Amino acid sequence: MKYLVTGGAGFIGANLVEYLVNANEQVVVVDDLSMGQYQNIAALVGDKLRFYKHSITDDAFMTELLLAEKFDYIILLGAIASVADSIARPMQTHQVNLEANLHILETIRKNQLPLKKLLFASSAAVYGNQGELPKKETSPIDPLSPYAIDKFASERYVINYGKLYGLKTVAVRFFNVYGPKQNPASPYSGVLSIINDCLLNNKKFTMYGDGQQTRDFVYVKDVVIALMLLLNEPTALHDVYNIATGTPTTLTENIMAFEKVWHKKLVVQHEPSRAGDIQYSYANIAKLKALGFTPQYDIQEGLFEYIQQTK
Ligand code: UD2
Image 1 (tube, rainbow, N blue to C red):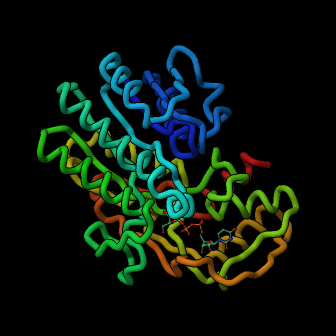
Image 2: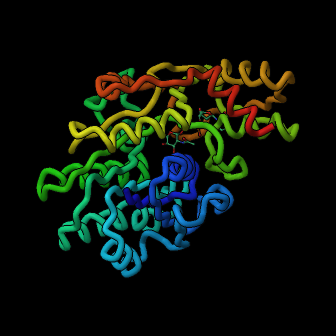
């Protein structure tokens, strides 16, 4: 099978690409390396993996690629994955996080490209600060940032292109994904990769808030399994699925778990909560579980494997 992965050099993309190449699939990655890192996939580039350093906003390039390749599966992970950047540059992030995806959908529709399925990566950010917990796919949405607005709009385009034009599509909402290949140097990295980096390099960790905030941290290998399940499951169509574990943990609990595996204390500096931070977040994953998904890693197992790979 032939796969297109936009954002395939990024954190989640590169983990998916590694899985696909190891499964002997043909993969094409488009990534402008603005957030992704070539080193994430460098060792895999070859007859099974082709890499194009291009922005997904390059419509002419994307059209040519889609017409030439006739992909079986398209996974849209390419994005400016930063809430802060979307607030600073709403127009530019909109072009990447929405318009580029819409252009891909239009190219497929206008040219009636045969496609087994297209999957779009949305975010738990669409739920915003609505109080209901755990977050179900049917929970109220409240996209607060340009990032969340574009994720929600793209998600709806993808689902409704399925319903309106017969494309086979599905969307997912990622919760807090962690694991190897996330760039800890990026200011937009997830908190667990920042904590790990602080312990690895004896740096001070800045804790925003009281440490009692919860998140639903899901290991990237479980995310890859969930993505493959949704691509291959015929009933997962024109719909959206949470990807998480269904279990919340506090920041403080995670710091303690890290310290146990690292056998050292994290030096913590306290700051007030960041503007717009939410206190409690976790997912109901019953919908994904009904398709047969069970997370293989609880937080202890995930952190242990992650730390072993970075040591
Ligand atoms: C996640 C997503 C974000 C958006 C949001 C929607 C990541 C990296 N970010 O943000 O893109 O989808 O969910 O709700 O997945 N923290 C510290 N110190 C640090 C960094 C973070 O204390 O150096 C705290 C932070 O204030 C927050 C928690 O750790 O309370 C998690 O932060 P995060 O940036 O990893 O993820 P989150 O859920 O805020």
